[in-house]
Amino acid sequence: MTHQATIELLTAFCDALNRHDIDDCLSMMTDDCEFLAIAGPELEGKTFAGQDAVRAGLSAAWQKAPDAQWIDAEIFADGERGFVISTYTGTTADGARSEARMIDAFTLRDGKIAIKNAFRKNRPPVNV
Image 1: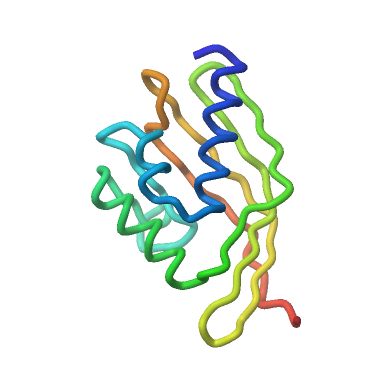
Image 2 (image 1 turned 90 degrees about the vertical axis):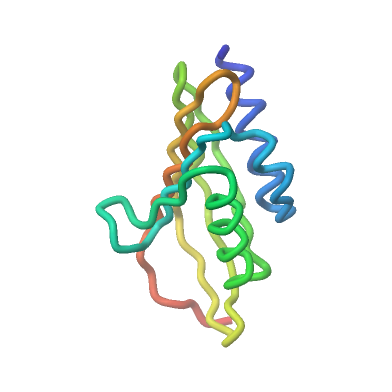
């Protein structure tokens, strides 16, 4: 992929994430895609592998924080790798509000996202 095509793909993916449009997100991911979540039992958090598992993982994140957004995105591309630095914001059902800087590291293949690897600062809830 060209630098510009990668930037355009990641921009569109970020927009779909913020709209919570799971079908649009998955349309930009490979059939064997992986989502490596920020937390979980594995070295890299929790791995969701394949379209069905990624659907479940992203849906669970949006259910936990229905107003989740990734704002102030800075998008970088380098060959088959892309990076999005943003601020995650979200409120859980019990009213806990999170705001933290994060980065998503993407691996691309055949013009689509093969891996979304999320890293976020571990910060206590903020007062609203």
